[in-house]
Image (tube, rainbow, N blue to C red; front, side, top):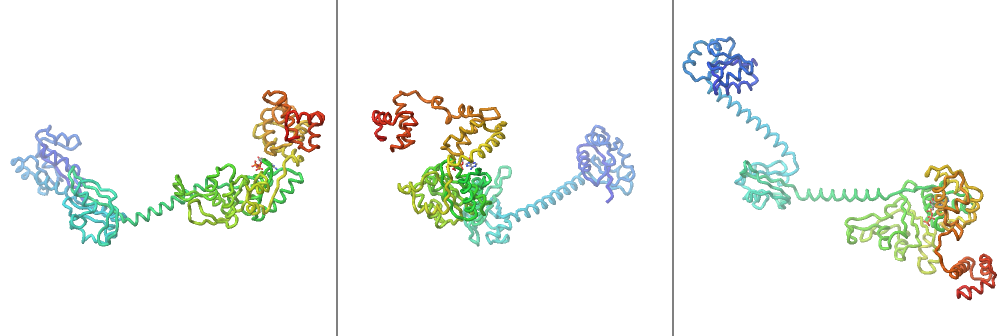
Length: 567
Ligand SMILES: Nc1ncnc2c1ncn2[C@@H]1O[C@H](COP(=O)(O)OP(=O)(O)OP(=O)(O)O)[C@@H](O)[C@H]1O
């Protein structure tokens, strides 16, 4: 469309305002402005914009190609002259008429914009899940969205125009209108469907005056369903993260068990065979002989190697907690049980549970454990649901279970349940042939850990280690070698190093002992010798020999010091 060429005569307030309005219209070109007063606001603005200005309006009238001349002076004389001088094709328009027309155009634009926004809003409000209803300040319902009809079963046509104080006088919308306050979480039933809903309503304020109110509501069952789903998901997530935190797998394999002695090899062979089956294994042996190492290796060599390996130290957990540690507990089982907790047996499902220090478990729990081993099912503490599991059991203890059975401290039936494959790991003192391999391996490991360059042991150091009884077994050996390697920088570890740094190898005088009266010391040594060699005649003879006194002197001292037990 061709652009409209306009010239304005008159730069006073009216001419200036028309100039500004026309400038904003895209389709209009302003060719010039005329006024006798070059300081009038219209003239100043036009000349600042680079538009042709003149104090002689007749010049403007004669410019060719002007479509419309706007007359803004209001002077009838000028008006007449314009009509006389203007070319025939040029139209003349009075400022007031043009003003009116522009105002109408503006209103039309505003109306169109408002319709567009209304259309957009309606589409948005119709797409939300919640029902929305709006009423004016008298309670006349002005708007409902699509969800309103879906939830209540009442159509837009039926609802609009009704009065909320009549249709739902106790609803949140009516309350908000009556009180002028927001209403949150209001529960009520609505409309034809009698659906239970939960609603929030708020007054609509325009310039501080209440023009109406709006309510947003949702079907209660929808919310409950969502809450239920949320709760279930939260429980699953909590259980999973709980599980992830605790589930471990075996850390060692048979390759980590060092030793070539016949005694140890036989244990390894038996364990390897047991690993292939699902049988319960009972590992017996003194502390530090490697029972845990064997348990890991058995799990690792079996078909469950990729499943969990869960260790429970039956001696370390307080008796009162052991049951919930094993079987878990249900929410609310006791004060503080705000959520349920999964137990070790459930964690081990599909894998292996390693019951360390089984000899230290109390009798009532032994009964419960027996039931699980027989039926592979249990209930969580405080729970009613029976949980079935598939778990391989490996148990270990350094206690003498037969002796505990004799004393009534261990259930015989449990012992036979656990003792399907029994592996007795021999103490280090009966397989000292394993020492070199163990020591070398330890030295290599510690060289890396401590950044040392130890090559090995001197012969006299080897003799010291061979001559020692190793009551703490391999664990004690590990401690001894580490203690020496931490303090010594030489490449060869000698007897002197061991004697200097490890209290076990110090002579009695080197040991840090309290000073006590000599006769008490004598008694201590005699008691020790008796404990070591026994109270038989042969034992006493050997004790006397070790103490470097005659048998008669020993008898004398026993009598004198009234160590009657040993007489
Ligand atoms: N044959 C072995 N080869 C290599 N290392 C071993 C061997 N036996 C034991 N160890 C090591 O000795 C330490 C003690 O072993 P482990 O914890 O398995 O003993 P345990 O019999 O379970 O002891 P406790 O009865 O005190 O629990 C561990 O560091 C383990 O790696």
